[in-house]
Image 1 (cartoon, rainbow, N blue to C red):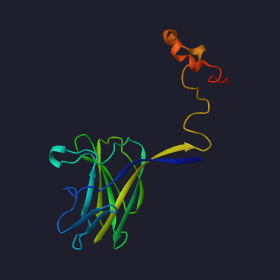
Image 2: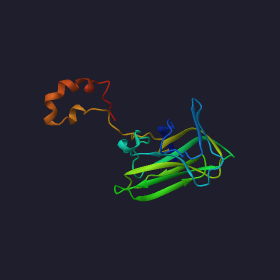
Image 3: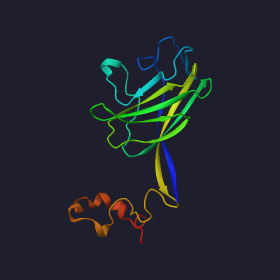
Image 4: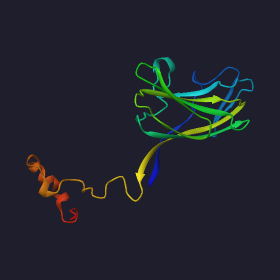
Length: 193
């Protein structure tokens, strides 16, 4: 049986009003509670806010907003967002290759969703999209890396040797640094299997 663990790798925030925000007819207020976005005339399918893993600083005057992802690894996106009417947003995660061509996308219509980063991914973006909402209270998006572990074991194998070489296995070309490694050869640090 496999168990899963998760590691928070990034908390995605909406810190500024920029070209990545939908501004036409919108009232946007940034406070300690988060971002309150209002636009009663916004059409369904409108991108409210987007975050990029690669930014042209000269053009946007903003820094990179998303961490690098490892191709082939599973991630979980968890949102802390409220809407009026309720549950009227979704998230689109788009993946691009080195030629800036979209190679894959994933759509999440719930507050929590998982995805696997495609092998050819060079950059990606996350979009917050209206599904008929008039108001959004955005706190953050949490991005977790998911790991698979076998039940009853740790990430290190049970037979893993202690850090450092055992004296019997010290290569000849490392003999000159043996005095530096002496603490690793003490009887307390050497386990006999």
